[in-house]
Length: 582
Image (cartoon, rainbow, N blue to C red; front, side, top):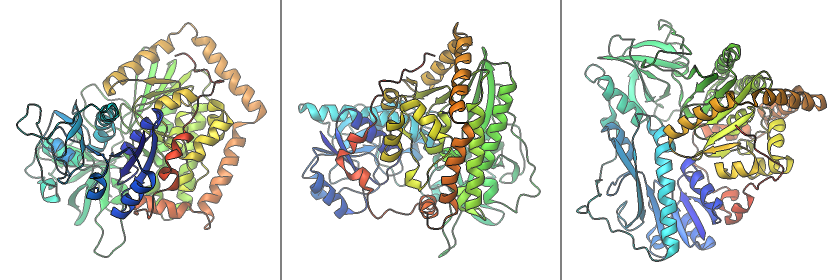
């Protein structure tokens, strides 16, 4: 079918729906909802059989939905209505939630229901929930709705609050008065719920040191305490604030802009509060904590059955200079341990998105900070690439893009959860890219495929990534099943009868490759191009970075998304690639 996606942003949900529908042979185009006339023009120009809105903050004009079927993806169960569905679900402590695909009509979120999928709600942030359980349910519901629509016989279910299974209700927008924290009265559980429900946007407006900030994200701390509301500790960019019965770690803050003043962005909390934390103790995060301990760790390490698991989770997937250096130190620790396999990656959500553009944008010298950041992540990649005495695995529980995905390619094996969205390109940020990608990507997929992936600037589904050799294994199921499968596969790899041969083979392959061209040559060539990107004022990087950081609204849909033939740019299988057995 010809399918048009209309979305307020080309976010991870839209990317996933786009890539999965294209994988199934549909001709898919994307139009950003930049105004009613833009949507009308796209519908007229592309003449789709079906319009789907994976993420929409505005209404589709009546003359569009009355002329052709338009499906709205709403992050709530049957009957749920309103713009703050997930916020209320988290703040109310919902244990089950859902995603509903409904047909657009004159009343927001009240159209006929084409599909609805429910899921259990884990204790996590709204953004992590959205990118994981919500995205899984949304894709299942979209594919079911598309199948039903294609069949031509299914009759959608009218919204009827008297029917069994219609558990939702119409809710008002969640505003700052609903999110406000009373530090001297609310228990940690209530504080956490509010912080988690607003972690990506808009944040919880609060006062620290006499200044207003939006608090973004929250993690429980079970040992520290203090005067409720006070900042009692700092760690790895986060600050710890006391509650009436414990404390919470807050990873990111955004200073509230002054009226008419410059825009602000989310930053590591200690960076946002720079100059005001001199008396607050720095408490280093231990790599390993006892079972049941509740605290904040960006990076952790544990061992089981000859496997070392180096887990990391950075807000938004971005990796600053300091975070890259801390992760490298943790990797060096893992290298010193008597393990046969090192597995890198978090338990859920992002694997990584590369250098930290927000930290770079607000640095005194953004070009120099860009240079420091790219070298720090290159150092980490080099350490993984040159590990020849054991095997390494990158386990992608969630999305990976740009330098974050290229970091994964440094490992011997790349395993990927079936719901991840992969973006193996840098060009939309005006960058050539580094992380040794000119060595690792062609080695995996071939030069022609590498050029296609980096130039098309389109998301790649795990299934397509497996076919072309970008990843070695796709793991189906939710986060719990994924985690269990990673443990099982890693242990099998560590105890495989072929383990000595696999380690010896990787050492020989690296030696042979570097005899032809040393790794340093790839890095030097990449960094020469990146230096121009960073320091030459004629390059577009600084402008594109600023637009990304401050969320400038685009003036048009990028041409590579608006063309419904973009599906033809999907990666193709490389017959020469033979995934190694884990």
